[in-house]
Image (cartoon, rainbow, N blue to C red; front, side, top):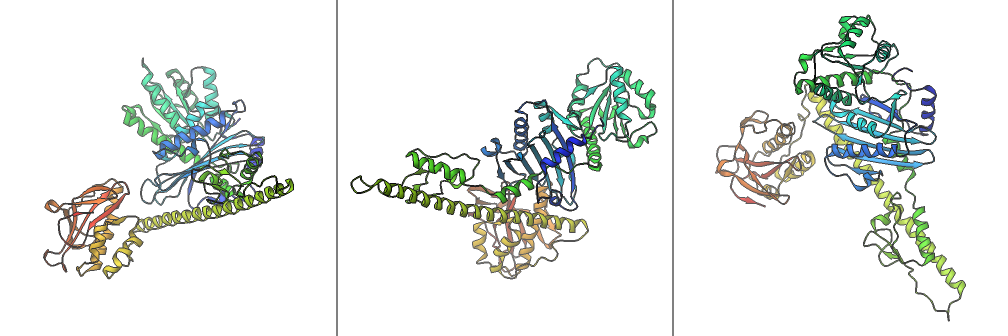
Length: 599
């Protein structure tokens, strides 16, 4: 069987099982975005817990990437969303007659103008083998490093916990040592197979080495970094001679060197297309790491260049659309409430968390009508008083019970419908806002790459009354005005409002960009972007203390303009500091010149 291809019958069956009517996965991929996709299959011999282990491995990897604890829903393999930070993380799960589908997305922006989405899908279609699909979409203006985005370590950890297949063969996450003549024959046959799609990374063992442990760790590191992208082989010295006899010395690998064999290799191949890395480039850990990075880069290029016979499995966007379209029916909740009424139970109901009804939030029943909702649990009691036997017949009691049930059902449907509408509106607004911010950043970066200035047409305020609203509207994501600065704007006498706005604009863009990129932001002296009259300098004796977001900050830097400090009409002082938590510049005081402790 050819490496990198799955059996046509099996692939066709998988495509039919994963097809979703009315949803096109290809249409959801942004135009111009580069996409890396790797698919593997859970082996038929795997136990029933294999899919669970794969999902658990993916959750562990996601939490490690986010750097903070994920919600408890995540570890129960349920839908969740943790956005607002960098990176952002979300997941969705749908279980129906077609199977069990779980998908997660990790979105990050390593630097300005860079935006990548890593998606992990674990699908268990009914009647087919479970699939794991990893997709990395780079929507950046400036391409990101694939070594930092492809989750090879996560896929290797999955392969350790569950048997996985790729192209009908066991997924390789460890190096294969060619120790016998039979293995060498198989290796050479696959190496020159014109149908091979998977690259080979071949490491040779230098002669005369007694302790192979350091080299083994290098080979293992290479194999894990290339999991799903390439297969790592190790040739002992005697096998390197055999390979030289088979493919000529100029195309072989020996004396501790590594070689990257692309698909399409044969005895007449151009050796520059299959680069050789000599041992002297890997004398220390830094050299080994750099060589591994180059191998991963080449493997990613080959993977993205390869054509795929099948359509991708259903992804996160598909599942999110299905979840939004199908809603979350309160039918199970209504049944539980009815059972409680019939049984006369006074115990709080705990509906299954798979149904995201408002009972989980303690808000489905208004206070004083049919229940109370102050603890997140719901105790249902009848709102009518219980009649005595002397004045009420059994049919009357049954009629009142039915009427109470109908009123309860109507209240549940009304409150649930309102909550779902509000939730969908909030989610839609949040997605639109995030998309608008991302597109604005990409357009600005594209303009800069073309030699333009995206800020050249910025309209600055002309009065101090316009200053604070202008900052919030145009620079709200980059600059914050402390309360003291806002109060001072009301009594400002500095005449050149536009110059003050240019200074804040410089802090929001040039200064903040250097902060985010890890460069030295303390630019002492004249600010050429604004003019010769504006100087950035330490406060020295004029240092201020500013209380911001409940913490005290020492303000040690100031933008200075105007030599006459005694004339507030011609003197501008902007005291500012950097807030690591919000990644913003905070203006502590402006425009008067003075020393004070601010709240």
